[in-house]
Amino acid sequence: MNKQMQQDIGNRIQTTRKSKGLNQKALADLLQCSQPEISNIESGKRGFTEESIKKIATVLKCDPQVLMKGDSTATNTTTTSSGATTNTGSSNSAPAA
Image 1 (cartoon, rainbow, N blue to C red):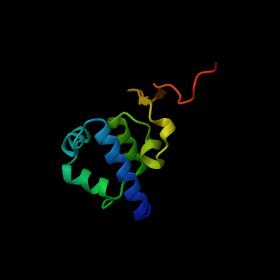
Image 2: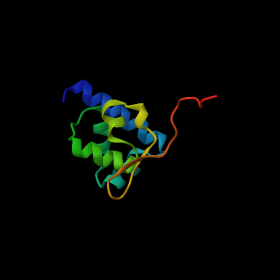
Image 3: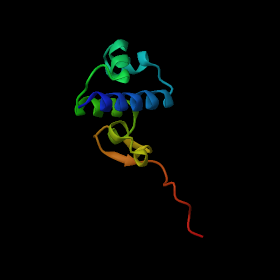
Image 4: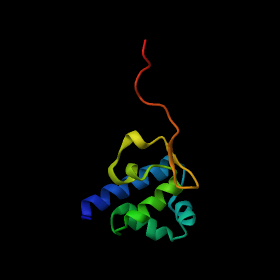
C-alpha cells in the first residue's frame, strides 16, 4: 500500500470517526490500542492490514469499503455480531411518481 493510499484511508477513518462523535481516545479504547496509534493511522504514518480496516469498520459501524475506497453507497450499512453486513438506509434516488 502506497503512502497516498494510507493517507486517503486515514482521512476516511478520521471523517467516519468524527461523524460518529468519537475522539481518537474513544476509538482507541474500543479497538484496544493506544491513541497515538490511531493518530498515526489517521495521518497515514502507520500502515495497516485489510483485517485491521475490517476491525475499525466494525467498531465504527460502517462498511469496510467506505474506509478503503470511499464508497459512499455503503455508508448506511451495519455489521451484525455474526459479521453479516446489512443495508439500514434508503437509497438516494427519488421515489417514482
